[in-house]
Length: 266
Length: 253
Image 1 (cartoon, each protein chain N blue to C red):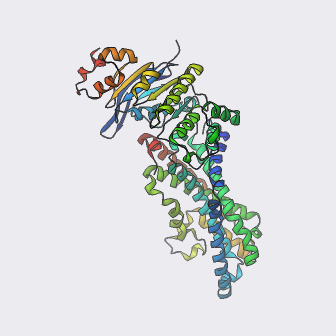
Image 2 (image 1 turned 45 degrees about the horizontal axis):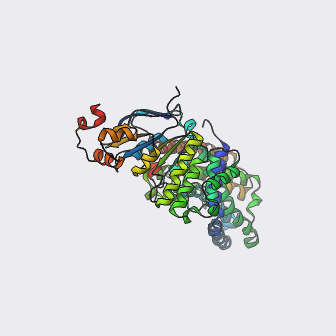
Image 3 (image 1 turned 45 degrees about the vertical axis):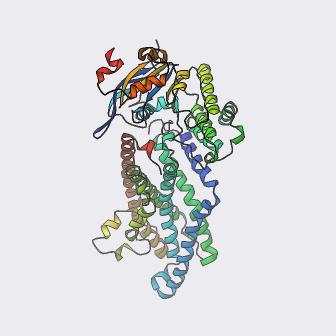
């Protein structure tokens, strides 16, 4: 990333911030879905706690799971939506005749994804206390580790979505909303990896999500932080973001070969 | 003698079996205004896209302001800019917001002051805080020009700068470009279908047809060579010429 400029990253964050602050329905929508999900899973958690010994042992385990799952989803969507804004407004032709580097653009989209995720998930996490008597903040510092790992995985998936849309055009934009859910059965958000069939467990364990959610359950049920799970999640995230970053750079160069930066749009 | 602003050598772009641009060799001298002319599909937009680094050539080499665009394009991009009525700025951002973003992208020191200067010069003060998508065609053209002039470019690439403008606004834009060129000494390369505009603004002309440069020269030299009164008649002669390359004046020279 030679010649990397924080000023150009700031310019792009400013561009997405202007867009976000200019539309209160968009701001509201960011917090709407995580809050609705939290309320739904809060009631399910309350019901299950009466029916299931396992859920009863881990106060708020399903609420914590849904909030952390939303971190992953919002992180991925935050990157993808910023990119789609450029596609919808046919702005790539202007951006890339400026000195903006692709790496600076990606960092700006990741920054904006962090901002969008915080705006979306923090209100839901705060509401969980008065509504269900559960505070996700009770997890303490490990919560930061879970959050950071899920953010990085979300960024990696978001960058992959950007690469695929650059390659296949707006016909592939639905991936921005689908990709994370494709992984949800093996993310082991609400159940342990051991529930999966034997052949699927290695697949699940090859993703950071399984390690993060296993770590979260260990913390809630046993009060212990599984450093082995965290180490695996961090290692896998490093591999994943390097792979997705590489795919993005290949797709970006391919777009420059095909002239897609000037022509892509609705 | 200083290096040319643009030097293209053997510039070629192929899309599978289609050759959009075929072995272009040309230079654009510093401080000049050069027109890239040709009918639809002649290869003008492809050529401009390659000059801007948006499109990677299949073969050939481009040097812009002394920088090889294959390996050093960011150094050139900081000193050039581009405006086209077909590449609009984001509609939901206001004019001021759009210009602020681009001012930061180009690393300007006094963002607010520069935007204020351009707003005065281009008569945009009345709609600086209006959404870019709610402007008239003439206002959009002025905003696009303001974006293109933010970094006081040494090289300005303009794609049909007065397309779909009324004659009064188009004349205003041409006058502004003339003044800007004289004041700044910038090099301008413009693609246009408006031949009177080319005759008025340009020092030299590159005529393209089917991906090749088929003739070039000053407007007056082209008029003399084709024994025509207007550049539009020259354009039609070239556009309607048969495909025999030996019939083209440049090839015959």
